[in-house]
Length: 243
Image (cartoon, helix red, strand yellow):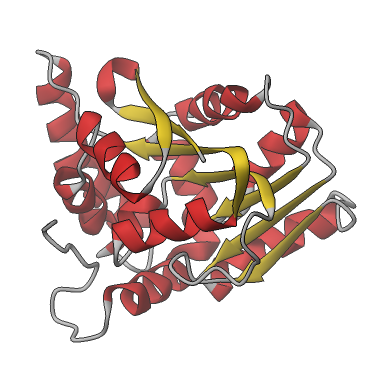
């Protein structure tokens, strides 16, 4: 059983309710802090993850935990699909994504909806690919979320998941630990009205079953041909699996 980490330790609300509230609180500063805290490298990581789908050429894609839509916009540029639907539990994040869609005149191509990763409101075998960027850590029930992703994938469809992980080599491990546990919360507190979000981030990463432990979870719910590729000495990892 995985240790459950929630954003607000003093709250009795379910994890998904806390996560929705947290992202609503930080939605207006999320993109700025993302770029700042990752030193812009998050864009490169997204591109690498999306390129895992180039050979598959998926035309109908579901982006789970779409947030402000950046992963989906990158997928549109690289993959040129016919349609992407993004789902998220945060109204605040979806409002930002919607504004971007309208500004870029992409309403015909990219649509966002409120959605729970554990109860995706789509038919079985509906999507060519499912993507998740920095979202699986926030699932209340990881196995349930992965199972539902598998359910909505077509046979032979691919899931691509990008998530933070934990580097293990010296001195990257020590530098990462200091940055994530001290620098990130300090900057987050300065620029965000919800400082809990940036103490939750390192705590949720520390408790996440990274690497082969995560691909094992994928296999247990039914994914096959699972892979994991560490990026930046293991700060981030790309996971893939086939239905």
